[in-house]
Image (cartoon, rainbow, N blue to C red; front, side, top):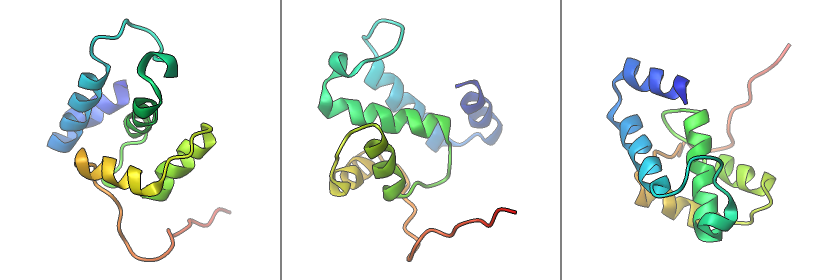
Length: 107
């Protein structure tokens, strides 16, 4: 969280500020501490996971496959169309470069 705030302030990026405000509004009204699936329900749980991932991994744009992989790793099966709709609804920038994502070579 501290790194996100540092980057948000350093870059002075309005998009990062809006993303933080949305995450804050979504969690407003819950007691401090870890948020559980039982507190918010399935329909919001996967959205919280995505927002948390975005806070931990700030990027200019995100691939839909990246989000669906994260959800699958957490035992959630969400239709990619639903993920895309969530991104559109919340103005989350999506990486729409054609083709497969480029892999970086490691030595």
